[in-house]
Amino acid sequence: MLNESKIKMMTKMAAYEKHEGREDIAICRYFKSDYVSLGVLKTGIAITLAYLVCAALYFVCHIDEYLRNLANLDFNSIVVGLGKYYIITLIIFSVIAFVIYYVRYEKAKKNIRAYEKRLKKLEKFYKNEERNKER
Image 1 (spheres, rainbow, N blue to C red):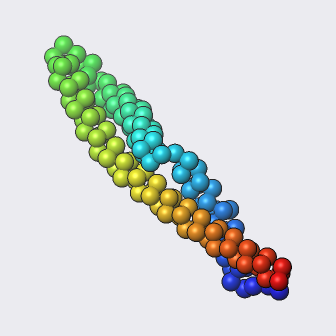
Image 2 (cartoon, rainbow, N blue to C red):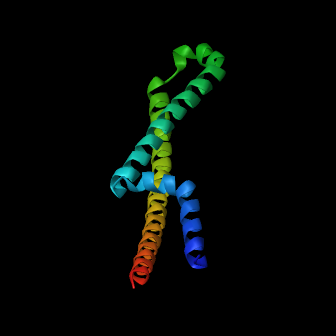
């Protein structure tokens, strides 16, 4: 005999496993601090590369101005200015990445807990079903 609630539960579980479950399981294999740190590190590397590309593009676009004033350029102030903006950009995006990866981990953990709860409920259902068949 088919149990409608059991079928609905199994359908929800299968849909979860197929879609967001894979990502949630991959996320929850890490400790929270490791997952968040890795995400912030990846963001820092990406920001550094993007900042270098943007700085190079800016330099290439204004190269004629820099070459005309080569003798009068204050390289110290240019490097300090670029470094200051780089650090500010890095801090802002690192904080944003921290929040995003923290929230993503907590959401995945919550989803995994709900999934495990459904599994336990399904296991109890099967145990009860076996007991009823033995009688």
